[in-house]
Amino acid sequence: QVQLVESGGGLVQAGGSLRLSCVASGSTFSISGVGWYRQGPGKQRELVAAITSGGSKNYADSVKGRFIISRDNAKKTVYLQMNSLKPEDAADYYCNLRFWNGHTWTDYWGQGTQVTVSS
Image (tube, rainbow, N blue to C red; front, side):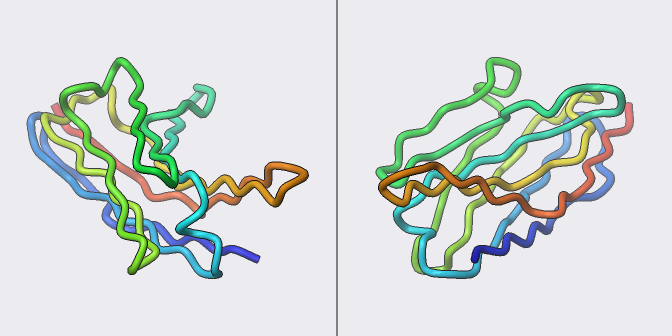
């Protein structure tokens, strides 16, 4: 079983920066894809950024050039550096780990961390 614990959310002014962290338990982190999703009020959850076990990265168009995802397999941690934050970035941010066991994909989710951006 995998548990994901996020931290780093908070209140920031527009134009500011935050770094989110997500620490995973278990032994599958290094061989799993991990990513960050967000869900704003009244909106569907959307992918923000993801990084594969091999280090390939994918970003939502809305955050390209502003957000950076990275991972530290030794620490079982994935980070999301968020720069030049905008009010529209405000949301609950969720860490995701996707594991392939040879037969099926399994998704694990953190509890979420709130990001508030004041204009």
